[in-house]
Length: 417
Image (tube, rainbow, N blue to C red; front, side, top):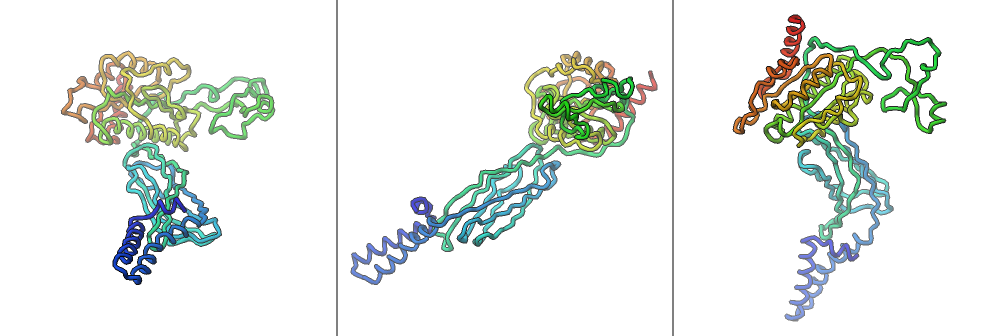
């Protein structure tokens, strides 16, 4: 009751003040009829508060988002199911779902009471032009009486995540070298069937076929173990994204970094569709959850796109090269680079030597912010001198055209060799 009285609306407080004022004026002027009117007006918000305060609300909310992984600019549908689990019907319900500002305005709904066991379904759409991971919710519920005199607030604390991935474009097929490489489980072994190596096991990794689980070893170790069986070599590709602050220009969705992320996502999807196992590496090193074993070739690049959705600018001036010391990481390397300086030559040379084929898309970052001091240098020419197959990309250039040009550069280098 105390909470309900504290939740009087402006209208409810006005009614209460009008009733008290009418009673006081009637006593002063000696008009008993006005006293009855004042009592009626003053009691109305108190009775409404008593009714709202004594009501026992048991509301259940189920929120689903479909799909939970969308590309930037694509809509996603949010379904709300509200159920009254109490024995008494509710009053008028005012619903407001909390949204990050990039997903649009907060949706508001009015439900004119829900009886015992009744359900109400509400649907709305969200859309973001900015990549990232966003939480939808919590839902706030305001219960009011039919006269709008009392408004009691409640909240559901559950939220649902929505991941907005970078925009991607379809890329044409070009010749790619350094295709068939492998290590670990993908390395062919020369041994007779039934040898000891045939039942060598390792820890279970996400995406492993459950039919390969070795139950005897799992029971002995206490965690799932799978067989390291012979498999054919598979094409592996590393997509390197230079996300350092010093290598990019511009701000927000119009920055060169956002373009670089979109380029990396498009290349990763294209390589996966061509049968490559793709992993993502940034200036901070290999991204967690975006390693080779987390993907099924040509089928599922969702973990890699999720990693690209939340990539942030790296403030370190020099990229991390620790992952280059790991064995068995050859194959195809496609780098998406920002501005290149002389201090990056050592790292780029190591990248080129690590890969069987090194390809790069170098962004002309000075074109994104012509009012700032230029980084200088010709990215594709500098990379070509280091042995890379490289092509430039400006803010007005089409990625599919640049990708086709990159294939022609590689063909000319192989013919020249």
